[in-house]
Amino acid sequence: MSKLVDKGLRAKRESRFVDFKRSFDPESAGEWCEIIKDVVAMANSGGGVILIGIENNGAPSGEDVSSVLAIDDAQFVDKIRRYTHVEFSSIEVHEAEKNGQRVVALEVSEAEIPLIFQHVGTYEVSPKKQKTAFSQGSIYFRHGAKSEPGNRDDLRRVIDRHLETIRKEWMEGVRKVVRAPQGATVSVFKGDVRESKRPDATPIRLVDDPESPGYRLIDHDTTYPYRQKELIDVVNGMLPDGVDVNSYDVLAIRRVYDIDDDYRYCHEPKFASPQYTDAFAIWMTERHKADNEFFNKARQKYYEQVHKAS
Image 1 (spheres, one colour):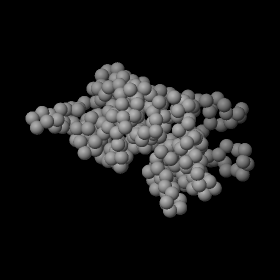
Image 2 (tube, rainbow, N blue to C red):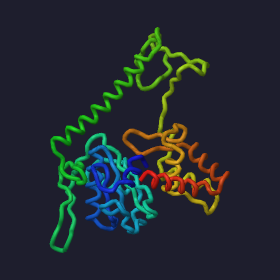
Image 3 (cartoon, rainbow, N blue to C red):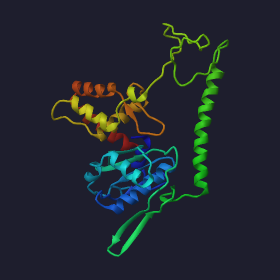
Image 4 (tube, rainbow, N blue to C red):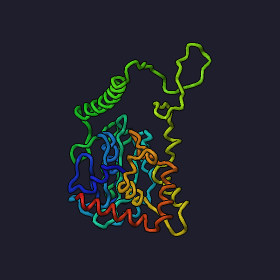
């Protein structure tokens, strides 16, 4: 989960980035259409969070969210693909807590290219009446607290966001050149480095000096192999029998120990949910081994942080 989820849990009203739902029935075709509309609108608008089990005023509804927590992330991906023909996987289901009540945080990342509905989202509301959540060929965005068909301004904001991303990447490159020491040579490389016998190949220097700048090609899917659910499975497999962690434990540990800012344990892709290392799984199990109350203490500290902030 991200800081946006924490902000959503503290929110008193819905917004462009936060949506409340009193409940969600995974057996209802109509509720699936409506929540997919909101997910797509948030993805197209830069990302956001849908909190299930929350009233319109931001208070817990008290509804049982167990059936929602049982939904696998892949089920949302399949539903979105059914209506958009796009494999949008930047969505994650988390267990969270507000005022002592268990709720669900559905975290949605930004869609790099806006999602467009390829099939109509129609469902039955009574034996002789149907309702359409979205039409074929429509593109939805968040307008305040509502998910509505897009307009010219929405498309302009999408273009502006992508231009800003490109601008930041360019400016970071310019800053690196400006900060280069006198006499340094600037070279442009392709995305990988390979051995070559060509006499005109660009040389690079490998030295043992620990103060020298390093160059390495990182495959984040290899160095950070776990999404949250996979991480939980790995950690639970390493813990003693009878001890289990869940998504709320992971959230609490991340916030209390600033894990998201520690490259040894966490990597946050630009358009996807966080990924974690084996080192993070080992660190958690070792902390529990040293203190059997480690997970309970992390939950309590996080609970105090959230209530102090609100």
